[in-house]
Length: 298
Length: 316
Image 1 (tube, one colour):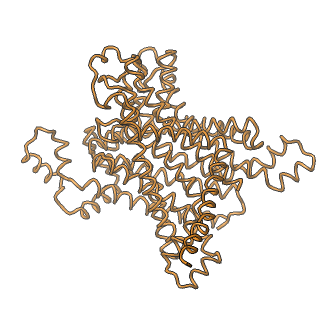
Image 2 (cartoon, rainbow over the protein chains, first blue to last red):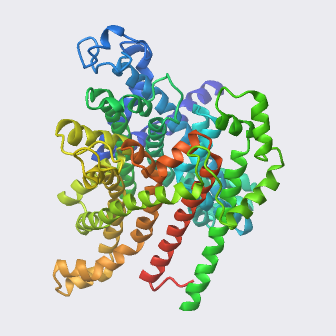
Image 3 (cartoon, each protein chain N blue to C red):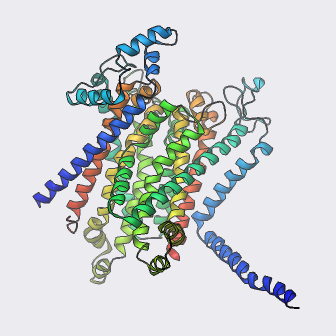
């Protein structure tokens, strides 16, 4: 008769754990609601995430479909809420589909930069010595390069594709993450729990990833939020310069580039994508401001 | 003192040289990945493969990369910057005039950014969480978030399309009814708004930190006016950290200027680089990249130096 009791006890043991976790998350969400910038930022970002996820369902038309009848009267109407562009493509549909591209490329690049930057920063801060020196110097060199000039050189040579943009963004954003993580690691490696882990005979990799990294996550998350916003700006700027994601798939910066010349006749064609990209970046930056406020209060 | 400054300059000068070497090598090898393309670009799409091969050989592109890299460095050291395949003129004839145009634009913007962001940052930071502080914080966050090209489109739609007060192009040629000065207003405004937002938040954060220091409390308790405390006690200390950030902004200016120049068709360095990169104009891209990195590293050094001069505690 011992078996049922063990089974009975199992949920009892895990319940407080699960409940505690839920409570911790609820507390965090509650804190998020306390900061007005964080709340507004979350709202804007969630809106665009939903738009990106639901684009195939909610977009009224396919993003690249030409509505020839609309070319003569491209201004907003009942059939095309935000009007159409110079090729008669529905702007609302293109903006919704464009959210999909930008919200895939920007976070993936940030994730890449966070992984690469954390590994380099952990290594530099944990080992110090010449490894540290080499990593710090290499980061300085990458950081001293005016970002867009580097993109122009690399993208002009290897062509423009989503993968290239992610690779370039990863490479140029990683040094900033490296600096942050390195600074935190230098501080954290002196803690008792790191000494304890060393005493237990854990490998350096285990200590870096399991003992140090989780304790550096606060500043890292705030910074990743900021980086995502900056990446959206750069992806937009690349599209605007004509070296971004290849056409015809909708990309907010590219939409502005194509229609900017028609500003004096049909300003809506350039204005709507500009408003879309601006609001998304504002969302990410407000979220970062809010997260920092919450972090300071803890 | 002079000795430490000399050592500082020597150390940073060496770093500048190292950076330029690494960058020049990277740019050079990147450009050399597909030599056939260069000759093809020069001759156009209708040249035969034979013609392309001959030009490739004549330009010496068939020899090993390292040999050509060393030769390239030698030529640079001798002051020969090569010939632009895009503009069909020697690089030195085009790059310095374009650079001067961009420096002019950046200097105008910089002259507005520094006083504006100092004023807003200090006013916001001296009373944290006041209504004014919140307003400035939100304003600077929002302005710094809007991408430069979107900012350009927004401003142009109001001042060019709706009101007709300003021209939408800044070609620096006084054509039609628009003077050169009126052409410069919008490009400068875009750069100022985008960069000032970031600098304001930096100065604000530094000011908030300084205002919480014990010596500020002492000064207030001594009975000094709030104004006196801010001007005489907080200001200099609050400017130490942002001065590096402000000088680093020059680095961002170079990047941002590419977009702004494209928006307003401004004949500057950034647009030249974009055209050169799209055209695979090797000589121009190489020299341009080196110049851009040189400027960036020099401003970094200037920032470090200013930091040292402002804060007597840092002497290493």
